[in-house]
Structure formats: C-alpha cells, structure tokens
Amino acid sequence: MLTADQILAANKANIETLFGLTGKAFEGVEKLVELNLATSKALLADSAQQTQAVLGVKDAQDLLTLPTALLQPLGEKTASYGREVYDIAAATSAEFGKAFEAQFAEAQKKFLDVVDSTAQNAPAGSETAVALMKSAVAAANNVLETAQKSAKQAAALAESNFKAATASTVEAGKAASKKR
Image (cartoon, rainbow, N blue to C red; front, side, top):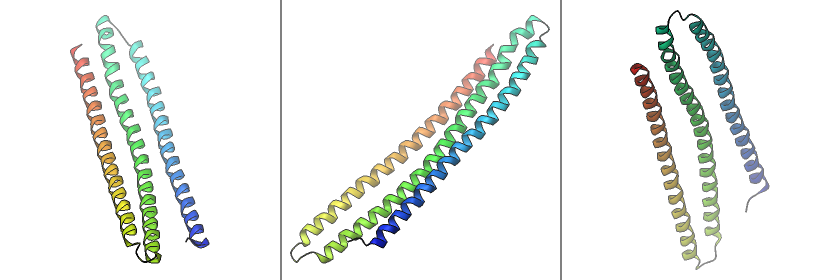
C-alpha cells in the first residue's frame, strides 16, 4: 500500500518534472523567437542591399546576372534557417524524451516494487501466479524498450535524411545559379 508520504512525494516529483518541462519548452520557444528576430534583421539588411543592387544596375548585362546573385544566397539562408529550426526542435524534443524516459523508469521501478511487495505478502501456493505476473511485466518492459530504441533509430534516420536533403537542395541551387 502507498502511504500518504509516498503519494505526496510522488505528486511533488511530478510537479517538479512538469515545471522543468515547461521551462524547457519556454527555452525552445525563446530560441525560436531569437532565431526569428535575427533572421528578420538579416532579411531586412539583405533587402536593403538588394534594393541598392537593383538601383545600381548600369546596363542589361548587370540586369541579367542580378537574379542569380540575389537568389543563391537566399536559398542558402533558407536552408540554414530550416536547419536551425530543426536543431532547436530536436534539442527540445530530446529534453522531453529524457524526462519521459526517467519518469517511465521511475514508474516501472515503483510498479516492480509493488509486485515484489505483493509477492512477499502473497498466500502460500501463489508463487506461480506471481512468477507469471513478473514474466508479463518483464515482457512488457522488453517491448517498450525495443519500441524506444526503434523510435530513436527512426529519429536519427530522419535527421540524417533531413540534413542530406537540405545539403543536396543547397548544392542544386548553387549548380542551377552557376548555369545561368
């Protein structure tokens, strides 16, 4: 049986975890806001430079090379922005994942403690039922661990694919702008 102190301690730990996760979420939002402000400032500066470049065109040849000169950096900056947003989201998600894994491990430990406590107080002859329960818990834990490992591998593969796609898009943009 759980005592009042155990319930209070569990609630306190849950509240601390909640506030910790809320803080991590705000950190992620704060990083996104900072990134967006920096990107907006850079975009404004780039717009001013591009306007000056358009106003400084002296002949048709300059006018023909202008779109290439203006679009290539834009593609690279867009890809960079996407990578930074992805990195912020991945870091925030990783923090949440760590917290959930820790909470799950703690809950799992407490459940196993309850099972062990129940097994010790079980009437004679119930050893088979207790062993079956422990076996079922172990099997469920193995399934969950396998699912967590698979999810981590899938996330790593998705990140790798995202980075590769971003790099190839930037390279394709560079190659296309060089052909003009």
